[in-house]
Length: 583
Image (cartoon, rainbow, N blue to C red; front, side, top):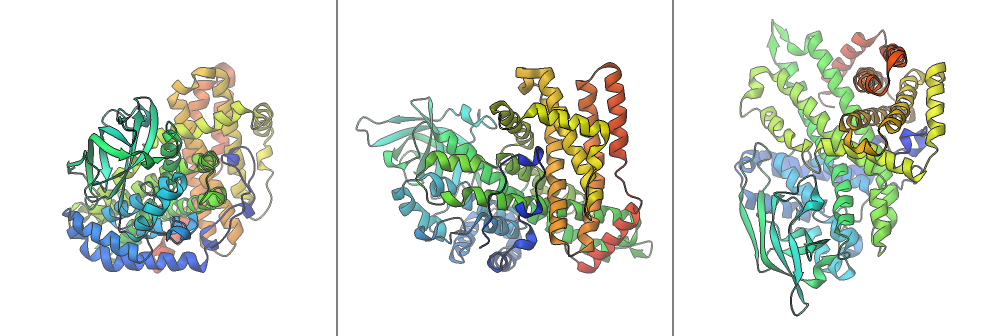
């Protein structure tokens, strides 16, 4: 596999320029990456797509059977070390498989849940005995897993869990009491990663098997979408869990729960990318076949604009996801089978900010693409039997999974401010430099073939530092309560990461005029979005003449990044994808 040198720390993209050599791109994938992606795609094509109706009817024994087949092909084993009968592949492979499986509706959810948050707590935090007992079976599909964190009164605030664990009189078992809700794979899972508070205060992770006395499964939830995945409540009444099934340390469950969710968010980004590419393909097929006014609807300029914008979103999402895969791999590679609990947790948290961006961007790109794809289908898109109708329903959950997008947005500037508080960088110097750049136009001093794209990126970074600094000076310790400002800072940070990923990839690859056209289109669209975030912030954070002058200046600067070939470029992109018939 491709080793990735750890060249950058989490969040560095906000405060410094990142060289193209520091990122991983889709073009850097190895033959091994392509082979496992092909295996996953062939499995989905042969074993899942022909049975979509059966999955939609909630045939969960069938889902379980298919997951075991996937296990036989090694598709459940990519993130499990070889010494525990896994494949021991890198996190890029994890993303590659997640993307390839992403267009399989509820099956994708069941599969990804098993390989990620239902297995990785044991992989990274389990004891040697736990790994030897459970990981080979989870790798093969003999055991299927579920992850139990959410409760009726503990959703986004996971640490508010009420489930309790009390040691029995003999000291051999913990007795767990409580209810977990919305648990994926619950009806057929063999193992459950359950979080409970020992003595009502020490948040702790446990491995619970389906046959442990006191465990019961509630009825299936009747969901809007992803009907091919089982979703039930899990009830524990004096559920007997052996003391050796504590994962990590008593009272340290939050380090497992929150850090494993970072990988869950990273993984969800790839799954939604796969689904978005599938929806894009459905749109291409429809607009090139469906005729109105005696010509394919794909020939209308308004349709071409939609197709080009969808392709640009996919290009940016793909770029930032594979970049993050490289970063995550570089941080976690030394901890694949480590006894260093704290080191593992720190490595998992290193790129929490970028992982949150993966989740937000992936899920929102899918929603944009599937919505436009349905629109291009017209009335047919609203009729059951057309794949886009199901894709539309299935997409909506992703903005809620793995922490809502609102919660993830709050995490993004939160991580930045934590680093600032620790003195990880000279915030005052950075703010002064950004202010000088904005005042003098220094952000325009860019070189190279993509200098026109690097200018707005440099401007976005200056604006982030200025807005983040102004907000901190205005609100101080009450910053956590200013969620409107935090959300807009998050949107600006997301724009920076996406644009930088696009530029660095395009600069690194240097092999396609189409990628450059996609990059220009994405930067153009993003400049408008940045304006919608920055202007309200500056209007709130500044007063009087300074407010009027700065808002006017920034609006003019951002408006400049719309290039004269915009319409023709989008038409050319659409024609290109009509020929390709795929992303």
